[in-house]
Image 1 (cartoon, rainbow, N blue to C red):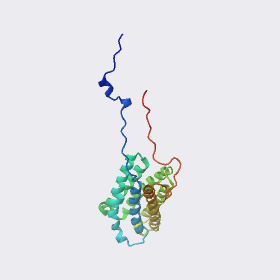
Image 2 (spheres, rainbow, N blue to C red; image 1 turned 90 degrees about the vertical axis):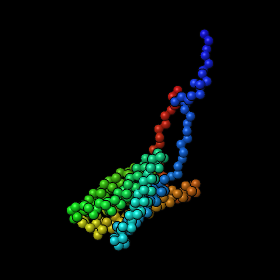
Image 3 (cartoon, rainbow, N blue to C red; image 1 turned 90 degrees about the horizontal axis):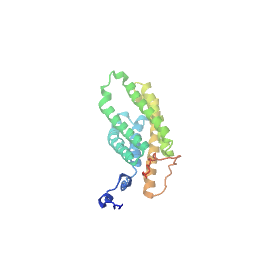
Image 4 (cartoon, helix red, strand yellow; image 1 turned 60 degrees about the horizontal axis):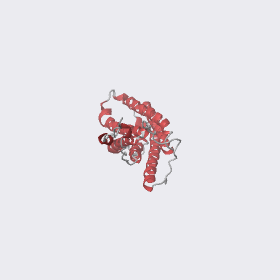
Length: 230
């Protein structure tokens, strides 16, 4: 019985098990951008919450909330999805959406809420929801690094104090809780700026210049690899 040689045409077609691998294009780390956008916008807003400047100037934070804290941070979140970093993607996308929603709340919603004497309750509910989200993200951040964990611990406290201040007073801007939340917000901004500074500096220098104190098994969740079939 004679044997047949394999068809050259069939040999040229790669099978599913032996398809050529195409390397994924690498992208820069979006973390420093997201942290910087969050830090600057938080810093400006917290100055007013801490009652360091006249509240009538508060509107000056809105351009930052829209473009830097909002859109830039949202883009950072999308790039974190591309890198496979679930934590970074959820954090930056969510807080980018927070600043966008804050812009819309201030410019298009608060003035329309009725009754006017209970607007602070709606603001308190808004802040409560973000406090809950930030609290469980703090638990997740325990597997990242010390600088990010510090940001989330401080941010949880800032949201909590601002939430209490909103529920406790018809005019939250005059509440001591709001002022305390503003001060903690300033600390949060400084911590986020440090994390951003460390990320971009360590990247450009190619070594650890600014420590971030990695925690156990920190980083993105590794992707599952599927072994090729025999």
